[in-house]
Amino acid sequence: MPLPVIADVDTGVDDALALLFLASHPDIDLRAVTCVAGNASLAQVTQNTLDVLAVAGSDAPVAAGSQRPLIEPARDAGSYHGANGIGNLHLPPSPRTAEPVHATELLRREIETSAGPVTVLSLAPLTNIALLLRLYPHLASQIARIVVMGGSSSAGNASAVAEFNVWHDPEAAQIVLSSSVPTTVYPLDVFNRVVASETQISQLRDAATPRARLAASLLDYQVTLADLPDDITSGAKLGDAGTAVFLVAPEHIGTETWPVEVELNAGFSRGQTVVDRRHRPGEAEEHGLVTPVSRSDIALTVDGPAVAGVFVDALLRAEPVP
Ligand code: BDR
Ligand code: CA
Picture 1 (tube, rainbow, N blue to C red):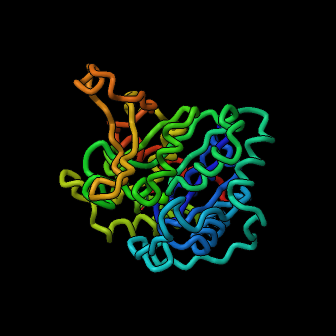
Picture 2: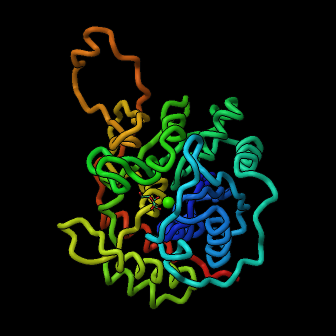
């Protein structure tokens, strides 16, 4: 049976790639998509999400959620993902509109009415999901797992040590990671290493379906960002889409279970995800000065080409939208 999934997104070039994959893979049942401000304003993210899903032929309900982080004021989205958040591509406007409810209500509805536990895929600042867990704590037992694109166990991208999704709303990330729901974290350590090759991008560009061609255009934009790791010389990062592939092909990604918490203090390390990879207690623990920290499964190694292959195959094999 396909995996029931709700995605929370800030579409976003790489969120768009993830949506195309989620709508295309036969082992995923995309139940709903919720939106949060991040890569673009909430209104732009919501429209981008509807437009991308229309190209993908998905009728998953979409709802707009949080315009700003829990504590901090709204942030300027910047233009890293292009002026419109999806690489300045102009998609045909979706014939659908967003559900007339807040994202937390769409999440609640889909989780409550699901016959079995649902996987929540978080590809954006975690504000909506933190609010859901605070508003409806009883739903935690009906969420199979929250898979979070966020954090880093090494360098950051929003700051020297903080990854964008966690940096944008650190309190929300801490609420989610310290909740009772099992969590898997897909941090920058692996996010940066999943790259579609130039050949794969050409295959998508030459494909018959609009969704594959849209994936190629989004990847072309990613190429212009020129943000590959030093040891990868060409291609385009899949970004959030690699996290979506993890749902169906976890064998290509190595995880370890470690305590993790978010730095909430003001200062240059705010938003850092601190992964405690020590194999034995330190002085603080010896002296009873530390409170227990929740553990997450953290992706630390990845077979990048294999993950990119799963992504491209799903897009190339997907049926044309009727
Ligand atoms: C994350 O931030 C956004 O720019 C991307 O969409 C991704 O979710 C990477 O730090
Ligand atoms: Ca994102």
